[in-house]
Amino acid sequence: MMRAQTKVTLAAASIGLLAIGSGCSLFSRPVAHEARLSTPANPMGPSEGVSGEDTTGVGPGADFGAKSGAQARQAASPRSRPVHPTSLETMSNAADLMFQSDEPFSQQPSNVNVFGELDGFGPSVFNPGGQGGYQQHTSVDEGYDADPEISPDGEHLLFTSTRHTEHPDIYLQRVDGLAVTQLTTDPADDGFARFSPDGQRIAFASNRSGNWDIYVMDADGKNVEQVTRSAANEIHPTFSPDGQRLAFCAMGLRSGQWELWTVDLRTSRLQMIGYGLFPDWSPRTDKDVIAFQRSRQRGTRWFSAWTVELTGDDAKNLTEIAYSTNAAIVCPKWNLDGTKLTFCSIIDPNASETVNEQVHGTTQDIWIVNADGTSRQRLTDGKGINATPTWARDGRVYFVSDRGGKDAIWSIATSASTGLAKSKAAKVDTAAAETGESR
Image 1 (tube, rainbow, N blue to C red):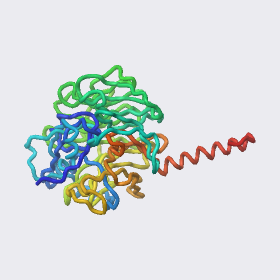
Image 2 (image 1 turned 180 degrees about the horizontal axis):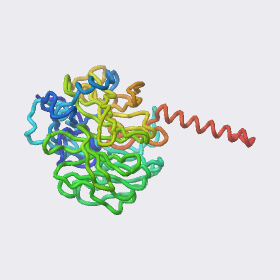
Image 3 (image 1 turned 90 degrees about the vertical axis):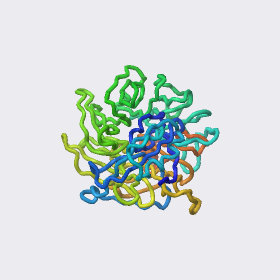
Image 4 (image 1 turned 90 degrees about the horizontal axis):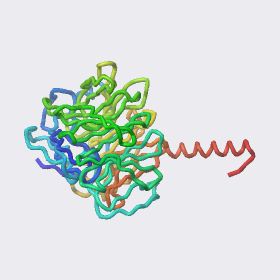
């Protein structure tokens, strides 16, 4: 059964890897290919959760909830079919990919983009400021920008782009600047770039070796090292708080599902920790917690946001943090102290009609929520595509949006960033009072 298609771009490049199964936006924007993700019915499958393709965007009015323990296990995700990213427009059909559950896994996967991008619309207009706290940071005349990541010191923006070639590459620019440095230049597709906690290294995914593998390089693009070498497609790396391990997702060769893995960068030891897609390692140092998305096993089978705790070789305390009865929830990402998550939502991916000026199946929004599932807050306005969010040191949330005409990187203020600004202002006032000066 064909379902409404939603444009979701994986910012990095087309991934032949969606033979990988469900597809969440890896990168954002049209380099990718539309990935059609299906989740064949698999009542409890080989595991308690399967990840599928990610579609971003939950609009106003989404119903959320959180559960853990036995209840969470019963909401396990269905088996997902591999996706093959090759065009950004494939991501436009991300909804179709993620919500289709009646096609056999053996079917030929569709093309999918790997950067979590959204299809662009017309030329973009650079506007460093905006209403509602919005700020545009990148602009493209051709191609798209996707999959933003902010350096630990808050000074630099790392992202994937097709501005210079049809194949996604990784770029770096100052958050407050316009000059862009291209870090990768090979003819393959590169994306899902993530900083190490100290900002000295970058982990990313690339298909330069024939299929998608995980790599690390210095923050200036030098000294590239291949981390994984299996026949499976592996994407979306994320560093542990100590920078010694990576978590990533891989399309299981046997399970046919998106699997979550960790690798020790010192010993190359690999460990499977469960099923899911687009992991993000919490910065907390008191315990190892990873957030990820996976599809539910009952009902709509849409994606929801989960966390799992690692203790030695054991993965425990599987908890569903955010779900919705009328929207898919994808791409969860931690803030810098591990107390909050941001994520994308997409309203009613199966529908395509307009209700109260919202086009269901295409409305994608950015949200934030406490780590325990409480205090949900929608940041974007329900207009256009808003995807693949990430936090900055100052509390702002950066994301991909087509609100300027083409997929580019934007940011928006949150209560955390507003509070930080007020705190800094208060400190300046206090210092001025102590020295008898005035601002």
